[in-house]
Image 1 (cartoon, rainbow, N blue to C red):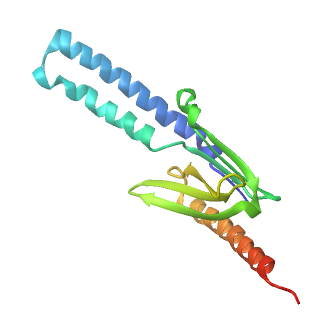
Image 2 (image 1 turned 90 degrees about the horizontal axis):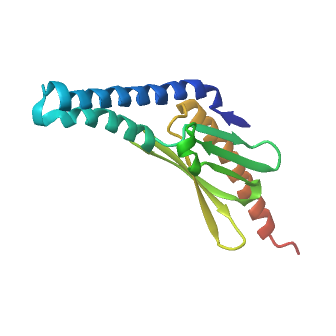
Image 3 (image 1 turned 120 degrees about the horizontal axis):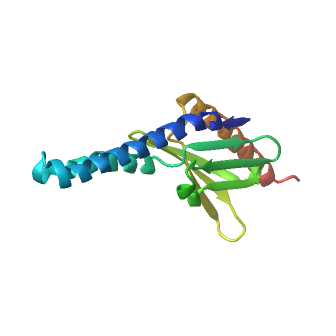
Length: 166
């Protein structure tokens, strides 16, 4: 199963561009307020507070592009940001399906995060984290269905390996 929200990239670019333009315009308004108009007096900091909170919210909401591919013998996860400045935290992971132990989708307020637990040779379990905030509920439901199928298959395989044949 392939799942991607890459087709929404132009919309996300528009939102980030709009937020940047608003920040620049409010910064110009702040400078004019301090130097020329002085209408707000000591409360001119409000002109910087609103766009700063908006940009902070966009930053904290995570990486908007999520791609998942379970075709074949491997699971592919890709979670990236559309802004170059924030692209250092991009996540791209590929591992065999049999290494998937479990997963967990955490929803806090309006933020969603996927935690994937993978077995490893060096340590017992590696936890991978992906942002699902920009995914629709239907896409998250499809992702859960596909991951449940892989976890169930892995559980049945491990039970078969533990049986003793006389």
